[in-house]
Image (cartoon, rainbow, N blue to C red; front, side):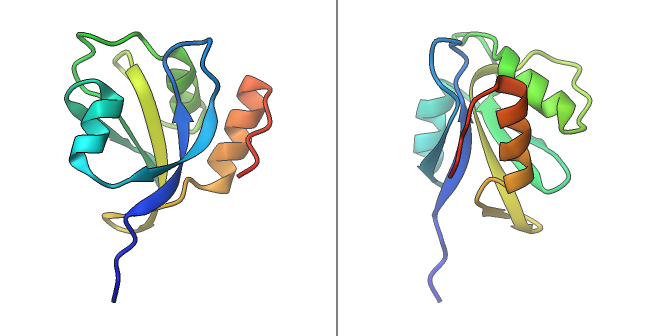
Length: 116
């Protein structure tokens, strides 16, 4: 049995001039740390989770990711920093492609098509 290590993530860059998009990502801690630009943090939703910068020391605030997380039903008490990578959950503790409902919500919130 081969485990899947590449998934389609909803990628929300911190820079507003960079587009929100769907991109293939590898489940590799080194890759996560490069994208997060530091220590990798994690927030879980109902059927999704997001990887992001845990410290925020060298990264920009990510207001779009904050809006999406809140609109998806998670209360935040902290600022989100750096690029955010949203993935789905297939089973407890197992990643999957970003859920379609989260992609549709991002399309509505940011007024941009993200067809995967």
